Amino acid sequence: MIAPSLPFVHMSHFFRARSSDELLARHGERYKSLVLLVVGLGTIAGVLSTTSFNVAIPALGRHFALGQDQVQWAITGFMGAMTVAMLPTPWLLDRLGFRRLFLGAVTLLALASLAGSLTESFSQLVAARIVQGAAAGCLQPLGPLAVMRLFPAGQQGKASGMLGFGIVLAPAVAPALSGSLLDHFGWPAVFLVSLPVCLGAGLLGLRLLPAAAPKARQSFDWIGLCLLTGATLLLVESTAALHHSGLGSLRTWASFAIAAAALLLFVRHARRNAAPIISLQVFGQRNFSLGCVVSFSYGFGLYASTYLIPVFLQDALGYGAGQAGATLLPSGIALAATIPIAGRLADRLPAQWVTASGLLLFGLSFALLAVFGAGVSYAMLIAVTILGRVGLGMILPALSLASLRNLPAHQLGQSSTVFSYTRQVGGVLGIAIAAVFVEWRLSVYQGLASGSSAAYAEGFALLAAIFVLALVAALAMRRDTLPVA
Image (cartoon, rainbow, N blue to C red; front, side, top):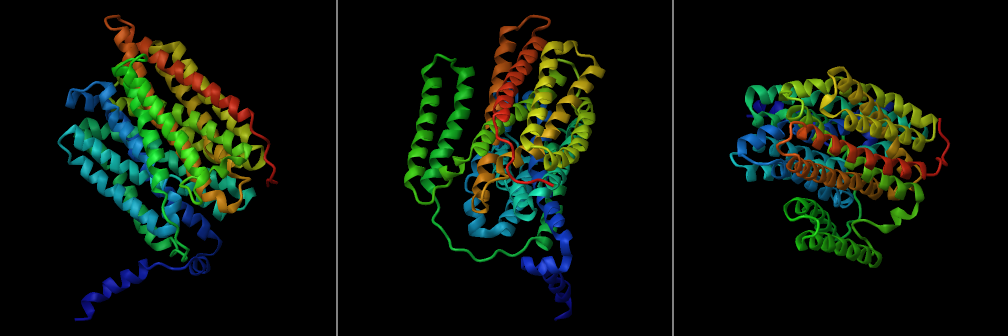
């Protein structure tokens, strides 16, 4: 009776939660890198759920007979849920610990991905995307937090580069892989891209993440969560109302007004609450506040571009889903190769200078796409997307360091969440506004031979303008005050 249970006993022992001291003694100094690998895999799974899905937008529109302004809710719903789910992450970290939160989020992401592949209606698909987004939102702030807690200042750039390399390498391959899956098996297969990564992250997390140390439990700020959630969702609704009802409609301005009121009520609530879901004290440092402005603008441009470029390649240039993904592969590889170099630069140069240089290159790539439009040659298209992704590779490891490096340790959990939250709010608005803007311009140019290319060119010009604003904020940040290696 005992023998059959021995394998299960052995597996239970293999995956049992160990203390951080025990794990450090077992693995030595490389333990920090192993934890970074685990957290990176979890973040990759969440990022894949976003980037792999963009190539399916035209197919979803055809399958469900919907326009871009409606289909974009499969993306925007994910992004909105991802953004809102970040807010309780600091409280969940205290309540559950890093290990339980990470493993729970990875499991939820895997289950939602499987359910999404089996959906039969667009509403069910959006629901699965919302659950995916909530799981990914809990995972998103954990990477920067792990870097800041595990590594000293002189090694944080290198560690961010290591983390960023894995995070962008998989999405670099994802469009080509997802496009191929879509061409052969249809859009449901795109949901399954992140499942193997979820499995790997879960198994390694069981083995390597330490048991949580007991902490005093604080009450959860439900009022703050509701106010910020309402403000976020109403901002998304406002952008959709711009298309359906127009800029001068009561619905549009009412949505904007209520969102602004909810945000102001949260500020008032946070000043009076002893433990708000986001403490306003984190905005006391200049670099962090400006970094959040850059993060918002950067998120707007980044996520809007990951939505627009694959659709532009298919609708304006006539590529298939697989071809569109393959066209983006060289730029993805360039991005992955740039990040480790940029991480080392951020340890040796002021991180905000590296950030500003990346913003300049990324914005320039959209300006070039706006100028060339559908007349862009294949070689030029490859060159421009590579230029943009090199800029992105410079931003990724440096921006979080420029914003978080000088903060006290007790503020890192909330600050990392706020930093990720502002980027995702920008991303949610970026996708919604880009989709609505292009749909509007397509309706204006309807019937014209060059209407499609003109609409997308104007969309890329909008993104270039957003990156000019981000560059101004980055240049206003103060030089790092901590010594770097």
